[in-house]
Image (tube, rainbow, N blue to C red; front, side, top):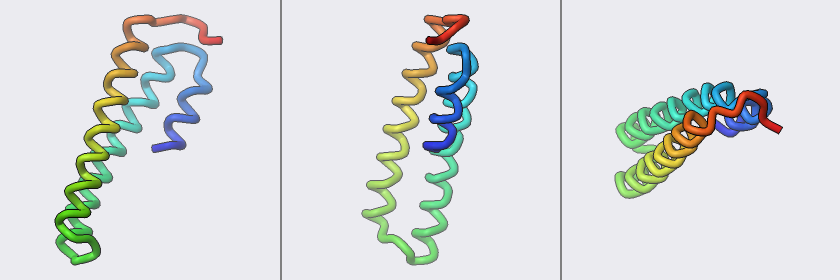
Amino acid sequence: MLSNLSEGFEQGTDRGFARYLYIARGSCAEVKAHLVVAQLRGHVTAEAADSMRKDAEQVARMLTGLIKYLHASDRKRRG
């Protein structure tokens, strides 16, 4: 996810950056899926998985807010 953010930040436009934020948001969903598997296999407790799932959901909400902001500003050249 961090790689998506840093790679996207280098894009020249707000929409270009937002494209990478969508990918990062998808990575949050992927993390949540991996947490289910980790919990089922006994690698993490239900409490730990729930805490990390909530963190992933919070990050996804923050990414959504940033995506909305970038679409509203829609600067053609970021600088």
